[in-house]
Image (cartoon, rainbow, N blue to C red; front, side):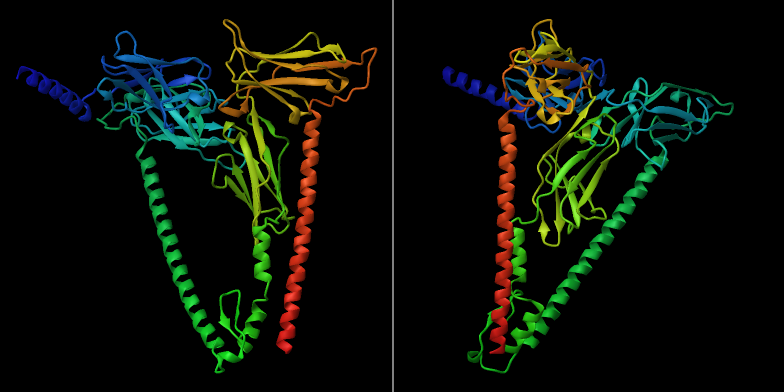
Amino acid sequence: MITMLTVLLYFGLILEHRTAVQAGLLPKPIIWADPGSMIALYKPVIIWCQGSSEAQEYLLHKERSNNPWDKVLPLETRNKAKFYIDLMTASYAGIYKCYYKSAAGFSEHSDDMELVMTGAYENPSLSVWPSPDVTSRVPIAFNCSSSIGFSRFILIQEEKYNLSWILDSQHQANQPFYATFVLDAVTPKHSGTFRCYGSFRNEPQVWSQSSNPLDLMVSDSVDQSPTHIEDEAPASHHQDHTVENLIRMVLAALVLMTLVILLLEAWNFKKVEQDETRTFCKETYSTDRFNFTWLPQGIHCGSQCEKALREFFPPGLILEHRTAVQAGLLPKPIIWAEPGSMIALYKPVIIWCQGLSEAQEYLLLKNQSKNPWDKQVPLETRNKAKFSIEYMTATYADIYKCYYKTAAGFSEHSDAMELVMTGAYENPSLSIWPSPDVTSGVPIAFNCSSSIRFGKFILIQEGNYNLSWIVYSQHQANQSFYATFVLDAVTPNHNGTFRCYGSFRNEPQIWSKSSNPLDLMVSDSVDQSPTHIEDEAPASHHQDHTVENLIRMVLAALVLVTLVILLLEAWNFKKVEQDATRT
């Protein structure tokens, strides 16, 4: 009996424990960042998560990630843990949550914490109207402006980050981008130091450098009356959003009504067309006397009806058109960037796409995006279009493809083009062993190093970007991160200027500033023998291009033969039909 009671009591305790977990009785953890949630580029930060003393493991979750971003064991007190970020970069900026695991299960997630990185772009300028020294209840306006095309600006009062304001930027011709923050009636509570930042919509946690600080001093007015105005965006700001929402709703309703009208009109047109077709194709003759033919529209009739409809739908044209599109006979477009595919931060670039003169629209695809990133109508020549980027930033660094649309359908995609942004991080250092002046046949080694923990380094010879080398970085205790590029036997063809860059593995198209230039001079050796070593790229590299050109020529020949066959078939079909009509 005692044994049975012990067993029941044991199961009762387990049930009670699990019930407590299911009811969510594990304390909700708290998350925060030290020294704060706004961290300058390359500065360290610690993310803390505090939960329960029964915690066995703490997990950190980053927005848009299905799996935990990091896992750590609790500290000695077990009720909290810390996650280290040694150097703050754009890849760490985001929204975080944390939770913990105990013997009872997993806790719920903490509240969101937004970790912002500042210093990604040049600083905007901040001014105030009418003056930084005002009396209570006077309206003031902060103006944040920049020559960079930021999507939005953020105004912050120091020590009051949670009360920040965010506004979309505005722009007028030949003027900088700006946003105006209006406070209808200030109070002494608004006294303090203000700064503003710029950012882009697709990277809301990556901000520019801080603007100039602006100290606001609000003194009490003589006949001051109590006010309830808080540290928040003005009412007019909310009113604007209300008007915008109403406009969007009205436009959506108009679009919906237009679609319904078009559908009804199409349905009615189809019905009338079918009735007319039945009347037109109806004959009083016996069906045994005539040969019936299925026409392109699916109409089934004979004799004079068939002859009349064939004048509107010539046999073979629709079939030939569809066959050409399905076979991919539309020429593959060409994509390139001007002035090149390596663009410095904030510099302009144009992406060109060249296709057919029959193109009606050109579409640009960005890597890992299903929908077109941009669309452009062709230029006057119609065989190409340009996609302009006024200011190069990390947002635009990626792999691109383009294609075009004609009356026949869509073309295939162009080859991939990698668009690289340089200048995101401090420059690495480039050195060479044994010397920049060597003779032919001597092995040399380039060493690219940096105190920043880059995931890889890229070595480039100026003018030969397509022949660049990429090596993953290495690291030893108390030393910088580095990569060594070895050339076994150099020739005079290697003469030129070399530079190296650093980048992170998760952002392969975002590079650092250029290293110091290094000029290599290779002179002929005394007993020089003929050599077949080419400029950096091995022979297989050129062979690949030859094979690609041969494949293109064969495909072009096949396309031409196919077109001739289709045209002959259409002509022969028309001739047979005309002979049958005369008979």
